[in-house]
Image (cartoon, rainbow, N blue to C red; front, side, top):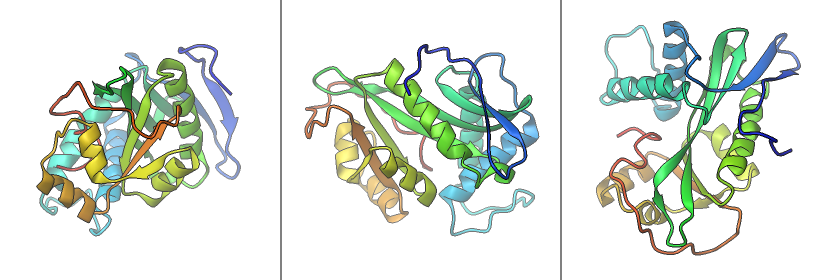
Length: 229
């Protein structure tokens, strides 16, 4: 089902066994999140980034890079919930999940933009009931409505996210192809490190073009919102 308007109205749906009615809305300047839920959503991202560690939010010490990434992505979430390109899940006034699309500052030689499926997170107590899948559907609708000719890219190391991406028409691409398409914002050593850490790159081109051509616009921080540095 395609959206009739970019400013889609809130839609309610019941998630079986959750016992709550959750509302899917778009972000905006009036959206607010508690510090507790902001931290919880960010720690959910950290656990997906660093599954090899038993991360404890109450601990003052964490492996190198965790705090830096936590602070960065916490800021991203605070920013993203204010954007109409963010799909939010709410239980009453409480933000319990978000999923973001972001037009990147790179484009193909035919002029079509790249759109990044960026940060997604759901509070732990709301997982396992289909909420992420529902948010993903709404994000797809929004992306196709607002950026109908876009080439969509994503990166993840979370099995559930990878499974969902493949289900929604994405194909896996190499880290080398990602780097070439994105205008080489990362050096070879960084790319090799991400690949070793288990990050998987995805692409979806609804025109089904095998080669969209040379990258003509470049930005240094084009992909900094989707993986630890």
